Amino acid sequence: MAAQAIQFANYATFPKPHRVYADSNFAFNLLCYELNHTKKQVLRPIDTDCYNFYQTLMNDGVELVGSVYTFSEVLHVYCFSYPRGMYELSVAFLQQKGLRVPPSKSQAFKCLLRSFPQDCEAAWQSISHRVAATEEFFDRYQFRLLSPLPSPKLTNITRNVLNFASILKDFFVAIEATDALHLSIAAYLNSDAVISLDRGFLTVDGFTVYHA
Amino acid sequence: MPKLPDEAQSRRMRTYEALGELAGVLANRGLVLIDSSKNDSSPSLGRDYAVPRRSVGTLTLERAPHLEFIYGAVEQQTSWVPSGLSGTFLGSERAFSPTAYPLSESTYVEFLKATKRDLEGRVAALEGELAEIRVFWPTIKKLIEEYTSAGRRVGLMQQEFAARHLSKGALEIAKARDVLDRPLDENFFEEAE
Image: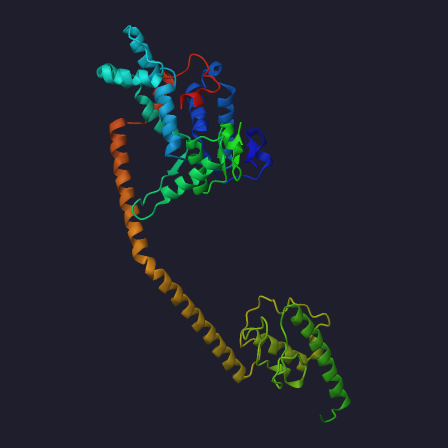
């Protein structure tokens, strides 16, 4: 068994969903489209595909939901890994200083943060607008970030969500731990389907997955 | 049974035929006509069919006045009952009204008593449900309070954050500063996570 996989192009041939959960890679590609659509030569086909699919959903009145993980993953990638992000700035700074650059980008960032805190702060200030831009992006594209829910004192919904994610991760080797969490949250939020560009999602039965 | 005049006998036979059809329709709906002159529940088309005193299956007292109306019509104007009596009559949305159909006082009193019993039963059921819910009321109240105060806290945090960071227009700034020089790799996101 596997997930019911529906390509973006085949959306119309299946029953229309009411609510879909967006994985962070879909949201990030939309952000890329938003930032770069005036410069068509740098857009990847996948960015345009995601945007067109997003438009189809909006035209159909489909509710687009996500979780703190959707938000935080997009924020992290945009602030740190996207070109001229903190990783790139850290490596460039260390090279400019003639220092040994650690093998991983995150180590380079930590090196900058610990050894040159003022320069690290200056580098951050040059791109800190990305935090607010990410927020604004989620608002403008009408993502409803619905998880987690309140009431940590009286209920333990989070624990239930994590339990289900654990079961999914236990059964399906192809999905990463965070992706299992995305699926579990999507199920908890009563989403009809998940949008993801990650092929691992397609291996998990019991879910409907829209993909490019 | 005393012998009836021919005309009366003929009328009685036509009545029985019409009632036979009615019994068939009722049987299809899981209902049984009860001869109130008998103590068992075997179907009968005896003389005392006019006021069914017991119900079987889904026949309820609420419907009994309808039945009596039909029986009355059968007795008084046999030709009124259509030969192919369909179930639509019984399923009619016409509400029962004592002024619309002539009923005996005792039948109407029985009807009201049954209605009263029915309503009392419903009230008792609702009271039972209420008692079940009442147990959880402190928890529900606590949840609502917690949710409301959490909502208030989050609202304040949002206001404070918005005031400090002025996020409006940030996306426009980003679009000016962060346009790419070249396309990202196909697997950029997976590798970047």
